[in-house]
Each structure stands twice: as C-alpha cells, then as structure tokens.
Length: 367
Image 1 (cartoon, helix red, strand yellow):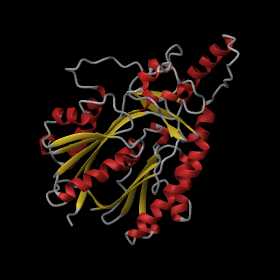
Image 2 (cartoon, helix red, strand yellow):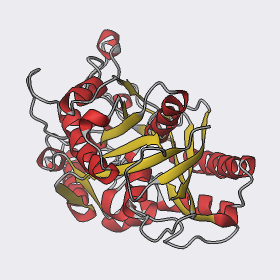
Image 3 (cartoon, helix red, strand yellow):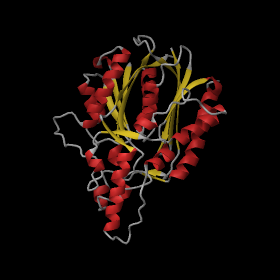
Image 4 (cartoon, one colour):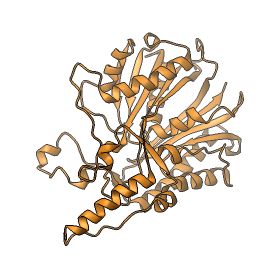
C-alpha cells in the first residue's frame, strides 16, 4: 500500500476579536431591552464572562465581522454581498489558508489535482465552493464540497487519503472555511458564546514525491456516525417553502448540551481506543491528541479515559481560549499550532466530533 502523508497545513484567522467581556456586555444590553419591553414571555437571564469561561474554557473568539454581532438591534454578522464575479467570502478564506499549507508542502496551486471544501455550512449549494477554490488556485483535476458538521475536516482528510491511495488524485487540498458566527443564536444565553470563525487547509499526498520537511504519515483513518437530534440546525433550501419566520431559533444552531457531553465523550473515547487497538497501538504511546475544540471539559475527560490519567497540555493542546469552537477547523488549528514538540516517530491522533453524531479519527506519525 502507498504511504500517504499530510505534507502541509495552514490556518486563516479573521482579524476581528470579540472577548467574553464584550460579548456579555452586548448580550446583557439585549436582555435589559427585552425586559424593558414588558414582554410577558421574556424569561432571560444576564450572562457573565466568568460563566462562559467556566462552562467552556473560552475567553475570546475571532470573527469575520464584529460590529453586527455586538449591535443589539442585529446580533448577527454583517457581511457585504459580493457579486458573482467576485471571489466569495468562504473561497477567499480557503485561498488564504491554502497558501500557507502550499508553502509548507513546498508545492504550488497547480500541483493540486483535487480540492475538497469540507465544513459545517456552505454559503451556497452551487457552484461548489471547492470548484471556485480550485479555479482561484489554478489547481487541476476535480473539486467538490462535503459536510459532516464538526467532523468535516477529518472526514475530508479520510476522503483525501482514499483518493490518493487508489490513484484518483495525486495531491489533495482539504479546506474548511468555518463562519460559525453565521449560524449562532446570539440571543441564547446557553450558546451565544460558543463559536468563532476560522479556516484551515490540509494537503494530503503520497510520501514518495513529498517535498515537505514537516510531514506526518497517515497510519489509519476511522469514521463513525450515529443519528442524534441533540445538535441541530434546520435551515436549508426548503426553509422558505415552510413559511417559517426568519427569526425562528430552530433555523440556527441549538443543542441539548448535557446529553451531548455525556453521549459524545463516551462515543469518542471508545472509538479512539478501538482505532488504536485495531492498529496494535497502545494509548500510552500517543504523544499528542489534537481533539475537536468544542469544550475544555469534554476534551479533558476524553483524554483521561484514553490515557487512564490527566493529559498534559502538550499531550492534549487547547486552543479554545483564543479561538472558541471553530467547528471542523478546531482540531486542525490545534494540529497546526501544536506539533513542534514532536520528534520523528512520535504518534499522534487528530480527532473531531459533533453533530450527526459524527466522529473522525486520523492516526499520524511524525516523519
């Protein structure tokens, strides 16, 4: 079998930052406004930066637009409409992240012959964002979009590995442009702080011909899905046919947080244990776990169940404080930013999980 490697990674970080304090100040002004309206259905509580930090581990988040989110008359990003002749906003994010990944891999856009745009939300059904990115990078071959919610990036890597393995493509770019602020209900105290925006890029190719000095061999991938309504977003192309009000909260992200925590932590820790066992690898040999960045307590528990002890920051790095939950991009950001301590031969696992439920695990070894 051909040895497949991740030869390059890149991250695009939006320039706008919202701290917990700023987000809470806006939210609490909204609550006060609702109470002042004397709406009998108003049952809102103030939030606090301390509550957010304790509940999630998040301190701030990067977003594509700040002013629209903090405007209590709007409370959603304000993104300028672009013409069909302009590069779309998510494609632009992909190109920015891809440039860093291409540089790390030592290749050009024309060396890519497959592009996958894998993320939780695509700004349009067609033409595919991936084809737009392919065109912008002067890549060859083919391109398509895919969505497996928060597991999109790892599912995309697994798909890229399969494409290269069977010879359908030689070098694949997987990009994950997550504008999570666009699907977030900033009027919901329990979730308004969860998400941030970011985009990641990963290049997958054969080891033979790899030009990167910082490559990771892909040992194995493992994917799993199990249906659950506990994380959901109902907006789609048929929404307009259902005559729903535009402000229906069911058209935005919502979840049963406690159920998700209990069920997903068990599913993920079991899958990781099984995946390592199938490859005759001892969990104790895992040098680093780049886990999905949704909640610090979830990651702490998953790592502890796998290792049988508390994981160190080096073993299970956390980017939540700076980025918040960036959906499928989170585990890749952690991988991109926290790998310099690994030496040749060190074992690691990239794992993401979320709505579906979906779980994607990628076992890698530093070359």
